[in-house]
Image (tube, rainbow, N blue to C red; front, side, top):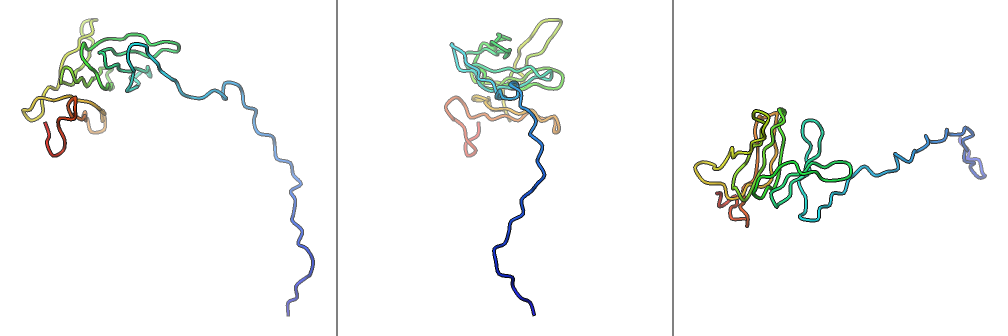
Length: 158
């Protein structure tokens, strides 16, 4: 036969001290993000190239490299870029609604050249390519083409 002891249960208290947490330096207190502002237009679509350099596109046609304290003009499409991706060779692909094309920028004989590489799909002109992703695994460039005012859709492709 079991009997219950009457009385209050005592909670065990740890007697070992836990070591103090590592000290946090001021550098670690800083947030790990960057706010990018531009007076002429709004930069968007931040992306890194193969060397880890950060770039943004601006709808006025310019592509900027983001430096520690400023935006540095890298090049212009003379159109309306909406996104940019870089391949493993360092070439860039730019979706541009004004050119209604995917542009490529490559270095040829120490000179940067920007030229259209995709202007149509299944015989139909692009209406305004927008967002892109480059899949190295599938060796493919995926992009959307909805036109400047959403002129195309899944039901009504370009």
